[in-house]
Image (cartoon, rainbow, N blue to C red; front, side):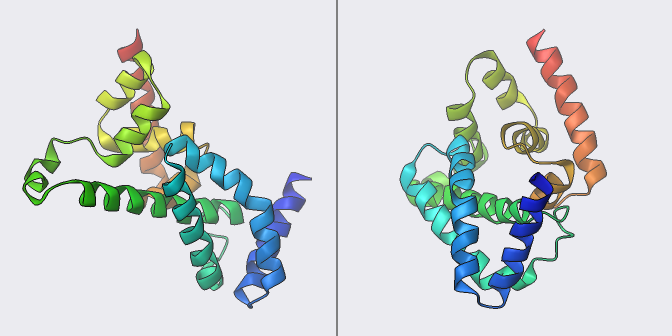
Length: 182
């Protein structure tokens, strides 16, 4: 059942690439609830989630022809999540840029990143503290793989690093978390 649904979603993306509106509507119907839940795990602001959803599906409509199935392990939903996650990061950056007065840009290096703020809102207590103390590249991998449930291949595509690097960072992050929580 799951592999058939995966194949169906890939087929829908290919139809969307040909301009099929009904396929686009069906893809949206199948994936929007799941995508909204995932985005809400990273962002509590419903306005940003709605904006990211809109931008994501607009990008899907415009770029469905770019879906090859190889970049994210052949899953249409993985490809869709990669688009959404990037749009969410862009939204966080826009919000942070507009919220800061120009003189605060110099302090950006010490201010928490928007992704860190989202993480803090999602995970609290000792685990949240330990996550925030991780190096950013380790935290990104854990966030993608654990909080978002992405595979190594999907995380690799999302972060733009090789799969081996994702595996190494995940192992280092688990060791660091274990030490921090013991």
